[in-house]
Image (cartoon, rainbow over all chains, first blue to last red; front, side, top):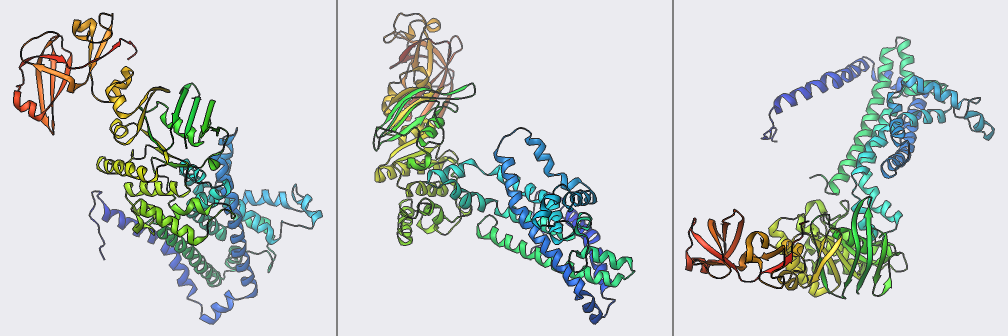
Length: 277
Length: 345
């Protein structure tokens, strides 16, 4: 394996060394501490903690709701990005800035705002209640909160790709007799797909770790609307550090696995289409 | 199929891209739209394709009004300067695209699509690249694939927008000849846009010279080169020396405007005759520079009032005469075309 490649740009050693050191310090060190703390448990005890009914339900909710929210954002985000790049309308800059709001807003504020809106006596909740739909304090509420915080990730990754998409591609498709839908499905969508998947992964990853906005709207009913981060906090408050890290390390493992798989798909997709060599 | 363009006009804001253009493209011919950038040639091409709508005027395909017809139904093949290939599809799928998007009733069966695509890839001599992606091809190859893709739908008209503009000189020359051969084989009415006069003169059956949204001249390459209709065409199609009657006296007074005020004589460098002795209708000049590269020897001269003049000689003629830098010579035009002076030039 050739490690170092000749380049006119200096400082490879320094930059690479710094990168490894930084990643080690900021990412790997805390994570390994997590694993070390977990290993203070016997395997049986560990297994008991992570397979407890309440923990399993929380895993299911966290990953399930995160996936659904990321999926919703996949479509909604594409639509928003499309509107922002394709059309000119008054207040466009304002809408563009609004997209970033979930990034900037303290998550607790978002959570409280959403809870107020979706509670059975809230502005939106009171219209949904007669239909038999309850959002707040239910898993659905978790999905709503995660959708809110995940939207900018998809929009901001897809937007530049849509902007750079040459109009010529669409013109070429039209000249060849493709309808608007065919052009969208066969030309535009495959081009933005890698960016869409990146946006999806980011939104999904963010949703898995989300805490602040969810705990208010979720109601945190054990076995029903309790998310994993809350369980971890709960364990910590009872000074059960090993138990908390056990749950966390399983979550870490699953998250890493899922994100790795998505990245693998992306890498494979990129290679297949000759965009990377 | 013939294309008739009738008093087509188009503006972009205050900019007049096309100013009442009339043009007829004959069935099966290869026509070049030639002009500097911003002259409206690409706009005209895009209006023919239906990618742009004219503000006024009509486009007729074989006598039928097509102005309101959508690009999709116009059955035109369009080749873009930057290829516009679909990056996520193989070469094969790119060429097959036009057939695959047809409605179910008119879509050929899979075997027929395969046959057609391979036939087209053979036509552009790139059958061996069918499974590659556009990113893996060279510029010249990409443009040939783009052409095959455009031909796949059996267009009635083939339109090419600066098809070789993004390629290097050598590839460009190759593709030019190749396009000419291809056109002789396929014989579809074709219009291509270029700003390269050499390209237009070499490839096209007829050349349309455009400037500032107007057509300056339409004719065969020989016609536009040998008998330019306007000073613009003269200057655009090659090097030229200008002699103003006000400045250079009788020198410009060869031809039909003789004696008129403010006449300019346009003389191509190869039509400048060099004499060692003064004679009738000659101007004295000093030889500044000699560049003897290639088959043509270029001489830079300077008139007594400082105006530069360029002359061209064949290598043999130069070897015969052996002019030296700094020598006093006398120049005379073999032929000149005179235009009444236009101060806007």
